[in-house]
Length: 116
Image (cartoon, rainbow, N blue to C red; front, side):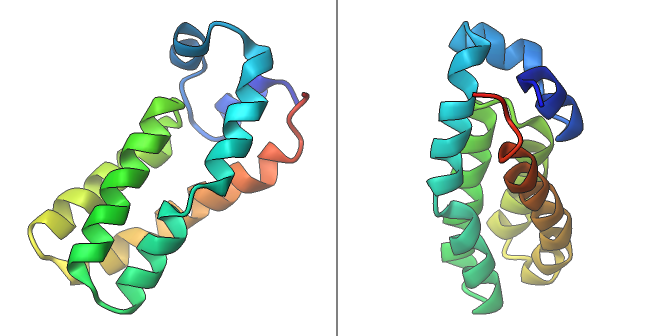
């Protein structure tokens, strides 16, 4: 799978990531580094524990990390849950987590198919 196909499938912004990183060949390495980031796991754990403060921090960080790689759909979803958690709305955050998980898991799955 090409990087451009990967970004299309995950609803990311290929043009934006190319502007930032300049070469498509660099992107698989950065995606691999993204997958080592713990913010998604921390977000899930904090929501399960109903720890609004920790969930907010993880969601905010996930939003930033995903935005830096132009993982647009994940960044958008992380932004929405960040705002719910900023307002202390754990109930809303719990309903927002499944779409985040779906997009994150798609990124994980398709990243294995990226051409190096």
